[in-house]
Amino acid sequence: MLGSATGPRIGITGLGTHVPERVLTNDELARIVDTSDEWIRERTGIRERRVAAEEEALTDIALPAARAALADAGVPAAEIDLLICATVTPDMMFPTSSALLADALGMPKAAAYDLLAGCTGFVYALAQAYGMLASGLSRCALVVGGDVLSKILDWDDRSTLVLFGDGAGAVVMEAVDHGGFLGFELGADGGGGEHLWLPGSGSRRFENPNGYVKMNGREVFKFATRIMVYSAEQILSECGKTVADVDVYIPHQANKRIIDYAADKLGIPLGKTVVNVDRYGNTSSGSIPLALTDARAEGRLRDGALVLMTGMGAGLTWGSSLIEWTTNGRAT
Ligand code: UT7
Image 1: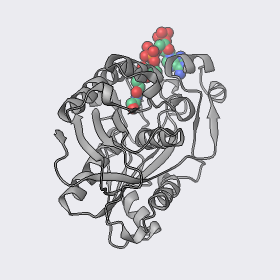
Image 2: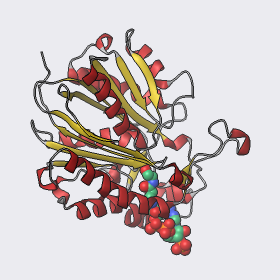
Image 3: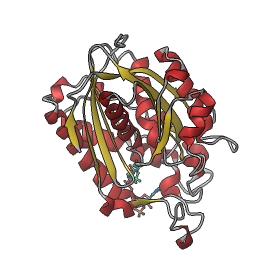
Image 4: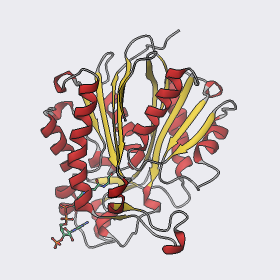
């Protein structure tokens, strides 16, 4: 799916994140599996990640992120009429985590549902909320992206254990008087689904009850380096922009080598690229909102900045979004 925005201007007016308190370092992982700080840093760029406590599930970390986003936007929870939660680690399959969040936040008029698109979930959810807002179905949306992958990892499997972390982010989306989303490119290739999967997690449970994340790292790496470049080029061309127009590049934070490759191939200087995989690892649906928040904290999200976000992950799925950042631009 590829398209540029033609309807009313829809932007992001609030941003919030939350990560669990517990920091897990590479050295600590090296005491659990046969790995080393040196290997992890060289092959992935990751130095540490956050992991949820035993009794912490997705909504426990998503709730503070959602509250922060609402406060940032200055929007009362009761005004939200759409809540989409992108995650592959909901508290449980149902009730949905979005319904639980809407209840906890006090959103009686919100439609709420979870969205499952691997690590690309957040970008997919932005596109969905954009469509609902631009069509007039929704007036004010909350998009949450978060995962607690530590709960579905095999803590004996070094090939996946060292890569992931837990975290969540949320954005408020509504009409803006300038800037806003310019377009989206989204895709999926189930043919590559076998390279990153969670056995025993659905109605095929009978084949492998209580499975953990499995990944063919080299295949996902090849896919990632190709698709991050393809998707970004597609959306830029669709929106009549060039790489030189991009002020802030927010790639999915899976592996520093993938980020470097994509930025280099696209011709985006590393100075414009947001990198925080060193501190959080791959937080799946939390990755892009966490990076957005870091970009803002570093003063990079000035009014009018062209922000390119690209995600990729299980499915295999991918997606890009282009937005002209708006500060204080809520339409009246
Ligand atoms: O959101 C999308 C999610 N996934 C990704 O983006 C992952 C994409 N893939 C990757 O990032 C990389 O493929 C990895 C970081 C997973 C692996 O890096 P690599 O450079 O492709 O390593 P490799 O799989 O080719 O393995 C190289 C060696 C192997 O040993 P041999 O066969 O050469 O003796 C592995 O057994 O490294 C070994 N290895 C490790 N050694 C220490 C694999 N994992 C580890 C580890 N610690 N954690």
